[in-house]
Image 1 (cartoon, chains in turn green, orange):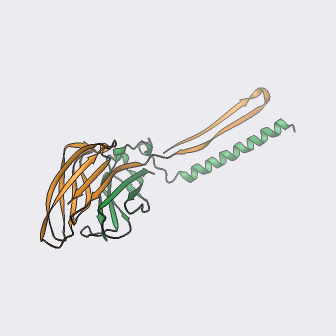
Image 2 (cartoon, helix red, strand yellow):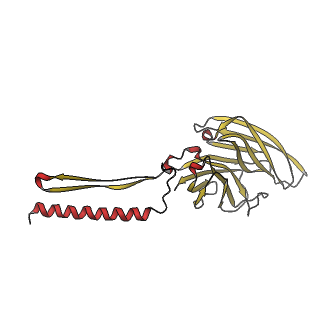
Image 3 (tube, one colour):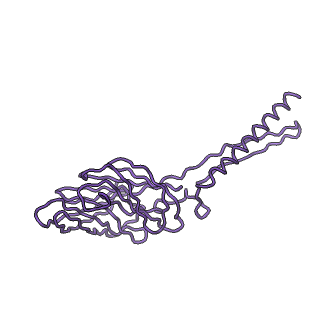
Length: 132
Length: 131
């Protein structure tokens, strides 16, 4: 067997291994990937998902000087953007764990638990929603 | 989410070789969508407890604010509520104000109108101040 043939065989084996790995990767990733309207979630515009405000709550109650929860109201601007999203917040009290939820045109409230205590003079909340 | 996955075969018959080029798949993560930043400023024992834009379609026409009166006396106090809306360039594009009477240790809701309405996609920062 010449060196050239041997090299060709090795390359063919490497290629087949890559093909097998690719097929496995597709199988593993096929489940959670969402495609909307065939165009993919990467096309969701800034106003495709609307964060309709924030509320500060203490044990589910807004009528308190303290708060340990931040409620975020979310909806999509159109059913075309309905689907699963990972929602995260950055707040004066840090960034609690992100949550994966399905957002639709109906308002969905997402509750983030934060460290408790009296409300600060200034509270800042920023919301991120990344398509899954 | 999109993928790039390509397979290219290059056949060179004159040397009886098959070259196989494989481009490793790359995942293109979608950019996260960022909402406006909500800033709730409190003073004079009045607390801003919420900022909820009111939308008509995708335009913001008003901002609903819940105000907490944390003071025991007098029985009722009047809160001044101001809303400022900034665009993504940091420019103040809308503002409005309103007053609301809030009984002691209670919370009341007030709606501050923004006229003319502003597209939600232009709203980068909503600042609510009560006092």
